[in-house]
Image (cartoon, rainbow, N blue to C red):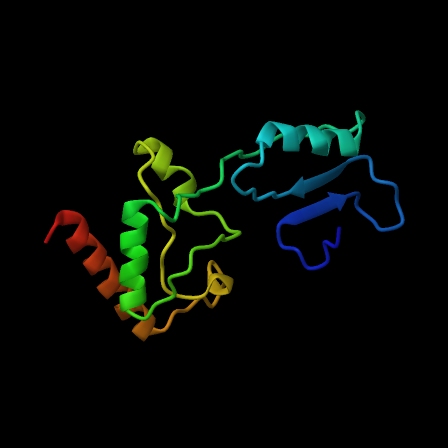
Length: 150
């Protein structure tokens, strides 16, 4: 595995580079897709690391995926296409409230949809073009209108 530059892992141990540390910590952030069983993945990680290392889960949430043929999803994707916005469903590798809100709300169809670039999110100088914000607001209004039957 090539982990160079991966922001989703962290390894630390010891106080100096030339000393054997008394303790080392390794954090691994795994984002899964539909069909990958978390318990099986946890066992694989534990087996790979061996019995001398302790492994604990900090947060364990299922992936967010609504079938793209769901009627509401199709309606939103068609609206996006009409508005000239990207309308191809896919995966994202970042955390959103979509991991916790749908189960709390009875698992309604869910899309992660917003303006801006994912690479900008939560950065010191995060920004989004005003034109993209206006376009997103227009799309959200249309989604709400169609949802309410207006």
